[in-house]
Length: 230
Image (cartoon, rainbow, N blue to C red):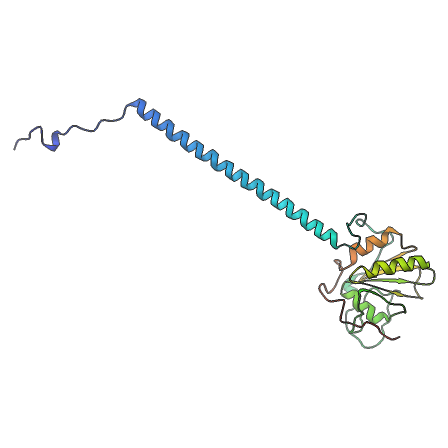
């Protein structure tokens, strides 16, 4: 069998691109890939910057929201250690309900067994003394109890009453047996001051109104006993 020039075996083979053409094509591909990588990095970098900015903004908003909830308003001047603060081991403070009286080891009490009914403490100001066993239950819910005796100036009592009325999870009442003109009590925490102007009033409220010492966070300060007879 013979083959002629028209036979496929005699077809002219395809021409290979020259070295220069291959080099140009490779450079074009490399430049395209580089541009794509740079563009991708730019998009990723922009995304990370935006996410970081968003996170910072969220932290700032959260911080502002927390500051706004503080009894001190903007939260200024309320941080740091409280001079003269007394603390008790929360694990040693009983939390059982009892219908009878309780002999508390501190005055006013800052925790221990208590009456099943708490005192309303949504900024409630009581003109007369209240039972310890009901007030202690309010402390268990995260309230701060402001008490005063006859040594407290009338102007200080008036100012403190106004402050309490504007601060949820607080209550106020006279307490003749206490040492010191004004006492602020929370669960396991207490400080004594001589004046409503003492910065420790703001500090104590800011740190312990529904603070980390609260045994029952989320428990209400309404729906209890608005007035409890002595």
